Length: 482
Image 1 (cartoon, rainbow, N blue to C red):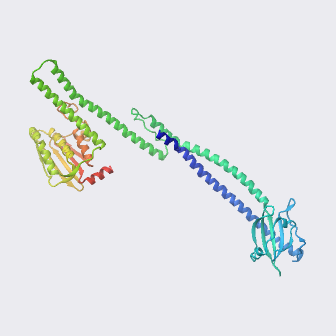
Image 2: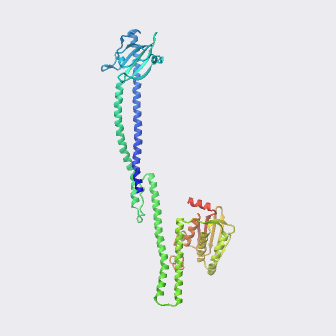
Image 3: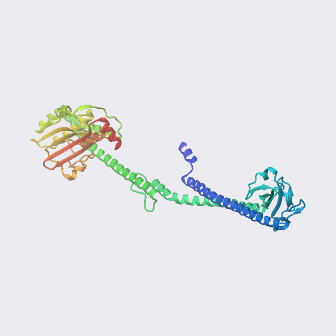
């Protein structure tokens, strides 16, 4: 329920893509239309100011030609242009005290007279323009400039901008309509783009839903996928390859385990059935029990080895590292296996291992070396030898086990460390191993952060090298890196 609530409260990627597309596209549209509106407003304003300056120059010429520079309070000016009953351009002549000397009829009802302070603050040439509201609240643009003469006079030219504001208001109405339509179109286009972009992901999801333990062979088709999704699909296919390999390995492992357990169990059952077939002497029962005990020991050893490999795969148990003198440890292992090697007529000795130390798990190290010795002695004829050596090389420690046995064919070398692998599959008797010894060796070395190398020649012998870091810190760093 918690997962469902979390997924239900989180918007989908398509919705997020649509929202971001709408926001970004609509923001660009707003900036573009806003810029165009600003250019239009400023262009109209500059054009009106230019018209006022032209009218101001024409008014100067008109005043000089009509009155010779003398104005009375009752004088009036008629503007050359008119719209309806009201002129577009208004003119007014003022003295330095702000008293009206002459003006266009009706101007006083529209605009207030500038004060004496405002007139005194005007620049000496060029005049000053400003936007003001009339007494009726209508917008006007005015331009006031001084008139050259013996007495200070000022000429004011005013323009009614109500028509401009009307045009701008109509433009804004159309602009809002365009923005509304643009918002709807951006949302629609954004949704279509997001849906188209998510279609390959939906295909990947559908393929993933079809994959089961029995259909691990299926793969995501990468043809036609975008570069980003192609990498994701290839990564997913790689994961499926590993899973398929792991499932096949587990299946084979289970088959091998069943096969290995079947032989001793069948032996046990057969001997018990024979023993129960008729009454037997105490010595015969003792022989049967001894044989059953050997088979039980083999089963217990196999189960113990399988448990070790399973724990090694999961790295559940931490290594108990401690400083180890390899010369002494190899000597102890050789001493343990020396009796068995002597019975087979194989010489077992340690050469060149004094003074070599490393931080290892002593028990696991002894187990790995013991498996190598047991395997080497088993495949070396009487009169042969098995030699153990250890050396330090930089940050690595090399432990070498060399025998003069029958050797291993080149085609088998890559597989000898695989679990249950046997060079001779027919050798499945109770006295034969289960093909797990070298797999245990490799697992132990891997847990120490090292590697195993093997070299063999048929009829000449085999050499196995265990290469591990000399210190626990180096091994931990190598394991982390891998």
